[in-house]
Amino acid sequence: MTAAIPPARSLAKLRALLAGLRREVADAKPRMRALLLAGDDTRGARAAASTAARRILEIGAELAILEAQQARARNTAIAADAARIAMAAMANIDDRLAPLQPPVLA
Amino acid sequence: MTTKIESAAAILAEMKQAAEVTSAALVEAEAARGQVEDRIAKLEAERVAALASRRAGLMNDNDGARLALLAADIENLNELKAEADAAVAAARVHVQAATGHVNEAQRVLNRERDAELLARLVEHAGKVDAIMLKTIRDIDEVSHRLGVSVGREKWCPSVALAESIWRRNLTRENRR
Image (cartoon, rainbow over all chains, first blue to last red):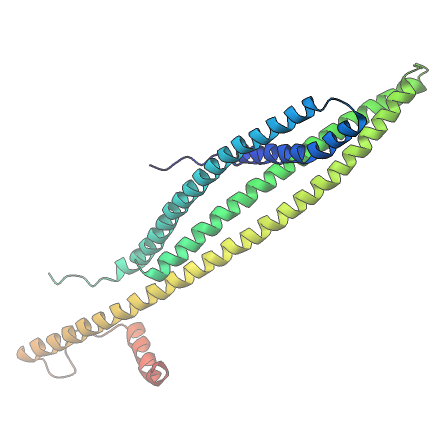
């Protein structure tokens, strides 16, 4: 049975989400530094950065699974299409040769 | 099924799949640009309506701030639109390239199919040659048994067939 191809849109959404979270984690360091220098509470920023880092791992794993599924489904679809195209080409040859067969002597 | 046809078909299927992906990307890029354009049109309409109200004498203290905000938003959206335009143009280039690859792969497959067809036709012609020769010899043999004189046996090839075979015979050296 052919595996369903995960929609490209959902993969794109996950990739965008992952990029956003990575940016968030990258921004967390300078933000915490600024908070520390200003003498403000860094607990909120720390928690947000930690949550984002955990989500990166979760979404990264989900994305990897979906991408693998997509690649497998795509390969299956390509193989099926290639077989269909090759069969059509051979059928075309057979169709051209069929009328050329000599008649059987009665 | 020949290996050459199989591999040409596999390449064509792969190119078709790649073309589908690029086409989907173009549709997505155009949709994203459409979204930005819709938003710009909406804000432009708001701006035009606010200016029309002021021209009609319906003044409001907040008009200045509102118009400035609309102008800023439109400017930002125009930047997004420029990016979206570039994304659409890039996607279009990919679609054109992918379409070219599909056409080329189709040409390769057609060439392989024709090469295979020709090989089989030539093989077939060899078999028909032998059958035809045997048939003519049999006609001659039976005719002679029936007392038909040489040169008067039944059946002649059609003029088209005779000429075609004769032309091939004259250019026999070219086919070596």
